[in-house]
Amino acid sequence: MQPVPLTITISFASDEANGVSGRSTIRTASLDGLAAAIKTTLDQILVNLALIQRDDGAILDGTVRIHTLSSEVRALLASTAWVVRGAWVGGTAYAKGDIVLQAGIVYLCVVAHTAGVFATDLAAGDWGQVTANATAATTSFAPTATISAVNVQAAVAELDNEVRPVQTILVRELFNGL
Image (cartoon, rainbow, N blue to C red; front, side, top):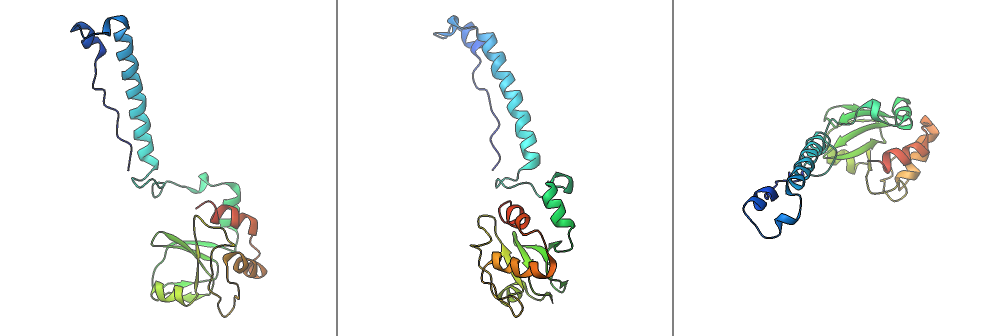
């Protein structure tokens, strides 16, 4: 949820003019001006925050652009090892190394296939899940006919023998940065 804008409910100058107790010993006009300046700045911050953050606290969809990525991530994406395909789509031919988004989770294609039902393809071991709060060594992986690994770290090492991605970049930028 986005923060609630500041609403100033007290006018110290009005309190002073109306003889409210204790208001005559401070510079009420200055205090009101300071509160107004704080509100203006806070309102501007809230407008800018809404441009980059969803109500659930995550980065706003479509905010990250290629030029905002680190040089390591751009190099990984430019390599022939990985292809970011976007949202998973049934009936699509996927190759080993394709990266998709399904139900808010990032998956790596580990077996070339034509997509059917995502849950079925996942259960068949066609996809490896990449999670935000895990490491490659702790994220489980279902072995396939061509990859015997039981965690993402080992699966990446096996894939590395074929496509030679920079494994340290993958672990640091994809697994820890999502």
